Length: 350
Image: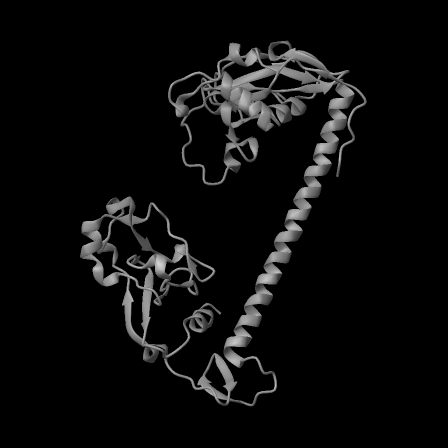
């Protein structure tokens, strides 16, 4: 979906903004919005929380919200279609229009339009990478976590102002495009899920039936695997292993012992698509690693989950040599040349 260019443009006079359509205005934010600071006297209004993903929503609908004030007395009141800004996170684009009236944190800024216009249009402008960068330049503070966008500084930011009918037209186009993209994403995710199911089914059939669809079969002697090719044998996994080693128990390894850039400790969450993706924050220092040396991995080992998401497993490569089998994992070390490692990996994951 491609937008056609306007017939004529003009220089905005701002190097970071460039050209804008010739018939658009360019105003300082203070000529579009003014700050309002009205406080709640009862705290009984609907409490609204800011989410970078969902915008301004009722606090009761924010999943995983842990901290809630016992009283919202003194919070700032906002009306429907006010623009609410988290002053400490303005440089991250954390602001949104209010879909309903309510009370927000006293640390937020509430802006109200004092001219005709669509607040959602200006919210969209401020969320663009160009304007997030300009908001970042307008903040003040020494440490990033405490940068603050003061009202006077926000007032100085220049904003393009199309005619109101054009603002509405652009919002309709953006909403239509957003719905189209979301629909495509959902369709792609469904397709990916179906392809993964098909892949797993093909792998399972290959490692349990072989590649010849006409091969003669025999009972496997295993309840969950009725038949296998007649020239195959069925053995217990333990007979293939020279050793089976669980990861250290919780009493042997505590969270405070993890040290970034130490020896990685491999847990089930680090096993992805048969390979290991270590977390640099899940590692231990040399003294603790020496204490847990019996849990070390070497190339050719197979590690798999012994609890939680069973079925996760991975093959240890050369780059993972010396890493540690973690809590919740089991290390299988095979007897020499008794089975192909990649085959066993697919057999366990399938």
